[in-house]
Image (tube, rainbow, N blue to C red):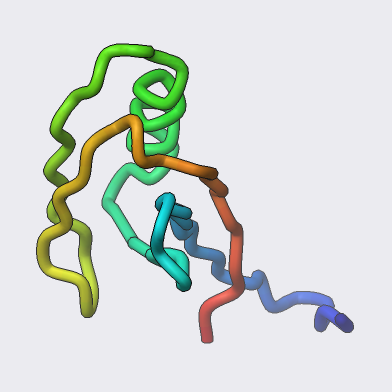
Length: 81
C-alpha cells in the first residue's frame, strides 16, 4: 500500500471476536478498543464462565456471550477514509 507524504493516514481499531459454534466472527468498534481487547483476553484465560455483555459502536448495538465460548480474539488496525 502506498502512503502519500504529507497526508497523515487516520486509523481505527476493531476488536474481532471468534466464538465457538459461530461461522462468522464479530467485528466490533469501541471508544477504547485496547482496553476491551485486554479485558476479553483475560476472560479467555479464566476457566470460570463469565457472562459478558458489551455495547460496541456501529452496526452491532449489543452483544452478549459466555467467556468460555471465546475461540479467538484479534485487535485489528485498519485505515479509515
